[in-house]
Picture 1 (spheres, rainbow, N blue to C red):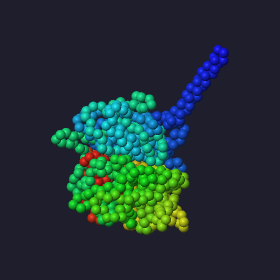
Picture 2: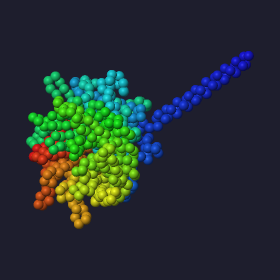
Picture 3: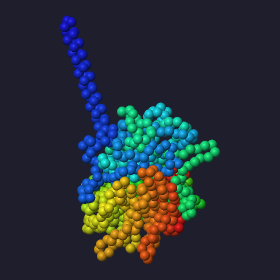
Picture 4: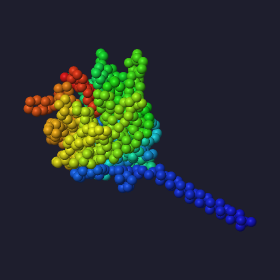
Length: 633
């Protein structure tokens, strides 16, 4: 009897041991499944499933696989750029970019400490340095400010959107990018606080996002490992007292013919990116919003300039993160956004409500013109332009048959809009990663790519209709001779004579200094003749670049420029330039030039028939949330 009882007891114990073992194996398998993403970028680079998606430094020989970095990190580290130092509450050092980085999605949380020294310090935003895969763009992340490591008293906790710029390739093949965000943050008193990042999201998929590691003074922690090295970041804001407030404007509110016509304060949006103008002189553009999904605004002039929010995006199928908008032939605003029915992006249209708006602030109605359907479609299509018939054209940086980019067309029809892929790039001699397209005076399409071509540094291309298809011709291969960086093409323009104008960046020195170059392509006897019109000042130990450009009615070029010494973390100057045609060639002039000033001109410029130039900066302004500016003739 005792023998049987002992036998049963032994079986129970054995079953319990087996159950515990199975449970441990299952738990281990579950934990392994949950943590398939390694916490550091260096670890990911050693794993085949991640290493295959990294871009490694390319040689001059053309390749069918387009490199993903703009240029390689050189001897000096870049600075994650924000407004001037007066607007920095806490700066945790420049970007390192080459040591490692820590993931902030897939359940991982990274916390860094920062100190506040003044009373009534209001946080208005932050900038971070991130490591990204391929063409990824950080669209949002949850940012919190707490009294402890991701805990204690919570002063702020919100999912915010980011403006991404200054991407540079490192030795592991990641893109190291500056990420900037503005928000209505808390007012803090002197003490130590923690900024925590998690739930990062990239527009093009579910890749890991890594926060750059550096040797700054901040203490840092990761939720699965504990203490880690600190990360690259800056907390932005200003300090108020009972009698005054000190706000860094980065640029003047008024200076001669230059004026700021609207400062974003967070409640009406932040981080504007470009403007477009209608026949009545109204301005339109996209901006970030407190919801994290983005907004489109209108600026109308009466006694002054009045801003109204036309539409707040809600995410999902209706989209989020709107990009540059255009005014269609029918007065409808068209633009691109992330999200859509299958999360591959969409093209949207905004129109006024059917009944008259009595308050001046009525919301417009959104129509999803087209939701992209997959990676071989024109996923995340953007850069819209319109022809006289109302057809829309745009580019996809990573879609198409070879997923090296595509040019697409959207044609209105009775049953809705019909999409056509006009051309899919291969990433080889025909180019790869298109960044813009324009409808030429001759009915052909023209544009630029970021990679591919004879030197793998991009091309200027032409698409000509041929029966039921389009034929591509390469007009110019961006050269590499003497340039060791990765050119970053800019806007392409065409004048009434058919000349093409564009911008790209080049880096002639191993330290990674970058200069803008403005060029003209002139049609001549079936060929295109290249002329350099102007380039940045190479005597500067740092960057001198041209973010955007437009043409006036007389065919003169206008644009913005900014110079920055990233190695010394010093601001040098910002300016608005003009290139004027003359009998002896082109003449360069800077009608506005500000020393020891930094701004972040962003998106498209617009010019009205009177010659007023309009643009945006995604930082600066009276509240640090960006501004819309005007330069009068």
